[in-house]
Length: 596
Image (cartoon, rainbow, N blue to C red; front, side, top):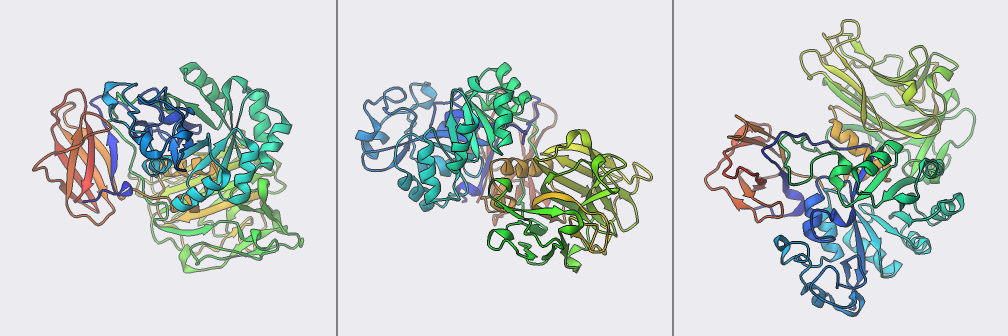
């Protein structure tokens, strides 16, 4: 039986009509695990909220025998049945205390978790967001390295000198500086110098002025601790990057866990699935005059052409994710070597990239600004001056084309923007082309533009000879701006995947980082009621090695989960299965599928 953390996935359902909203632009950050609904900083809290929150905020202390444990206070008095300072007690002593009964009899027996237990329980569902309350920089770095989670977590502190020490020991660890009171440019410079690119500030001290100041210095700004619906709405409208709350469900805009979701989003797939090209744009980190733009798939290397003789490789705070490439029209662009890999040979395609525009479409000298382009126009991204849009054009082998776009009113210069575009010839009867900005769907074209509603279903047009920053190696339209983390797939990404890529980039995670995150091999994909309240169809997908499965149910999200005997799933094909089940609990049940 699969018992590993990354080999089973649990989704919660209720017999009510609701829809799960995921991948919001503002990150939902569960304060102490979402302490409104479960005892703070316990495994119960982390398990309760990990499917709904982007970042799992928590606090770490150190025991007398040098072990890291999760606790906000310096003593155990407030949240356990024990007494005394954490630093004066061993891990074994701390593990003897009950950390849940103070909250509710439902949580009798909860124990103080170690930091390792918190991390392994939270990943890969949510990103651990750990504040150091006690302990030295070297000890934390050593522990994160031992657990092999340096690139999978975010580490935070009010002590910016401490963060600087951590950064010196492990530059790859993502850091967040905590603060309150008056935010100034000088304080943000100190934060940047400490190696942090994220700021979490007391919400009472944050207005649009502080937000603009942080963004002007390329820092993401989170606010803490925000619990009222009105305040949460205010900060979402303000445009902060993340909200720390005891109630992450309200930040996400979905019902809390006492309401269970009947219509979950599609199951996540491995982001590397059918990836055909991925340019990280990090070549300039080792050689500032590098002429090869490396494709991580090793099939689509590009040659960087710079007639002006300048470097054009960007690093440090001006880059998005590690390194970036500065394009300058016909003075700096990258030609991609022609190969059969670009003949997609299917009727699905997706783009993902980060760009920083120097010009809006109306400011172009020529008609177009070629971000990724070719004279054959098989599949391209470009600025369109006449239509005042940033567009995705897809052409199929039948010669049909669609051009969904992002209006210039939604674009900004001098800021990193995430672009994604998807062609799905299998969508409906006519096919569909879509374009996204910062995780949000901006435009959809059904069918081809010449005859909307019909005829955009064939394979992608072949013969692509493309460039990044120019209309192919011989074209005349260039693009001025930065690009980073550019990827192409021969499949249609889901909106959830696109939102996950955007959210990851917002906290410094590249596509490469996301692809090495543990992924779910067994996922519940949907549930239907036929008729409502009587019969459930629980659909799931198996990407793992299992050939038989068991449905388990519980009346509480934390379990225990009991097997439903003699229930065998229907084989649907393609690794997809369905359990047909009639619930016995009219209030609501929790389900888990396990591979045997």
